[in-house]
Amino acid sequence: MIYVEIFIAFFLPGILGYGGGPASIPLIQYEVVERYEWMTVQEFSEVLAIGNALPGPIATKMAAFIGYEVGGWLGAGVGLFATIAPSLVMMIALVGLLYKHKDSPKVKRLTQYVRPVIAVLLGILTIQFLAGSVEGGGILHTIILLVGSYFLLEKWKVHPAIVIVISIVYGVLFLSGG
Image (tube, rainbow, N blue to C red; front, side):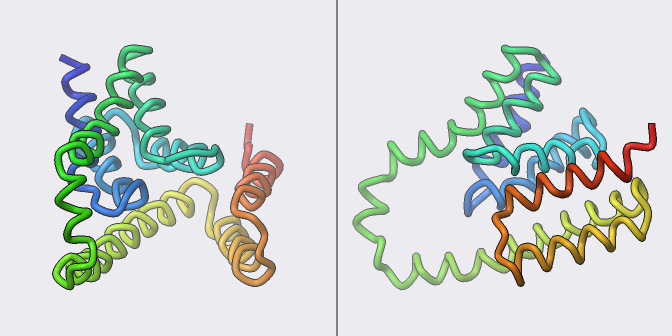
């Protein structure tokens, strides 16, 4: 039964996550944290951070890792397949139709309408992660990481992978608390 749950947990975000991996992350979080309770928000945010540090699509990396944690190697395979299955089926079934109507004003308008919804979902996820960061590391460390990340990413144009590594080093040095 666990493999069916893993499949559902990653298949549904794959179907509903219009816009790719980033749009699927809040949906995956709901399935993994809220619905099936396989992880806490803190654990999920750690998986997300590690997944972001690695190359490749985020949703497939998360599905494989979480599937492995829940159901071993078979769980990883089921999670990975469930994540790519909706795209695979839709690409095969609808590629001709989409190509035919790619310049349609209605298709372009649909994309414009979906973007704000994705932005809100990502905003809610960010607020939840921020609350977890304050709870786990304290307000001072959270502010240091937020401000430091902002300057590194936006002002000095440092590559996000380097910012993630710097944040990990900061956490090891100042937050390991062990």
